[in-house]
Image (cartoon, rainbow, N blue to C red; front, top):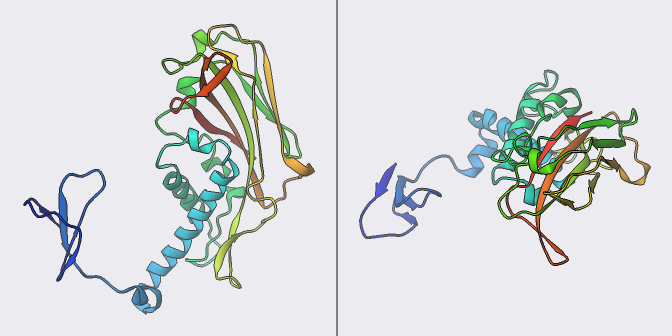
Length: 267
């Protein structure tokens, strides 16, 4: 691949040479036009392995999106720009664990590989363990539809690394459901096995807490809506997090940075 260094700056194809920009790189780049057509990739025998990989990769992206959709209420302010790709990569690891289905049609059986998601940080640059150092515990009931995030009394000034300018914070407790995914020969695509429960969630917050005053003991309880009892084909993700605010008058303004969320448990 060549880099274009002259004064002529354009993108697109000229003859057999394609000119383009690369995000994060200075200058313009050029490369030869070539490669198989889309029709060849989708039908030619020599691209069978490519089609298998494409099929499973799309499924992994779907499963990762279900995790994000279930937490859509808060995930935007908690995530880095690569969270979708990182979740897809985890789902691919789970996909590769399936030793029963043929390549290209392997399940994403999260229920048997939940450990891959435990500890996942939605922002890899802002770890909850580096921000929130107060003691806590998490529990859930045997039916998997109710859980508690229990925080004993503590001094935030000593145990929270808040961004400059923040005056208050809220603790967050989430339950979200993600289904196993399997190939559906009728739709010719991967679908959640339990479509009704996939992406169901509950997100609860503490009250606004002063960063410079002792915090009393707090328990944040989350309960999946509509009396749902999770089926054997789904995993319940229990998340905990923190978000920061600046109080001006009687209003609280959410910070764009410093907020974090992680999957504490999966069951």
